Image (cartoon, rainbow, N blue to C red; front, side, top):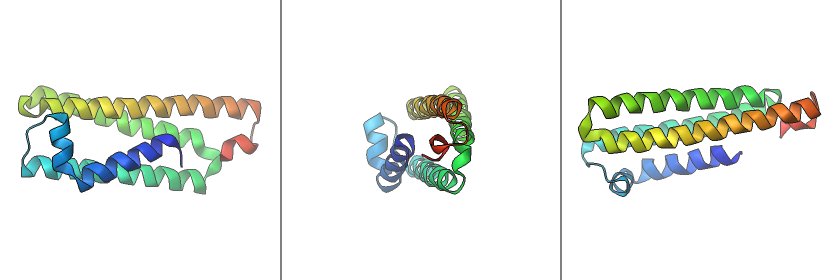
Length: 131
């Protein structure tokens, strides 16, 4: 499991298990609707982490595609959260923190994509693709 997938897994587990704590740490307004949304985000992070790990193990020659797919999902999430921050001022802080986290994950995935590309150039079709 790659570091970014471990981080997604950990974040997903924390926000799923303790949505109220997550909301308070960020300084957002708590409520049952917000907790439900935060839990849903936790499920998404868990699914993305486990799905990425499964895909990487099942298709070791497609490491770069998995990284790009992860980055795409996270950048779409960040864009959506920026729209939420604009439209719902009462949720602005939570939305901006979520957008920042997603952007961080996307950045790390794109760096992994670049590293995988370099390894592929050094060892085309070799051991580098299956790490």
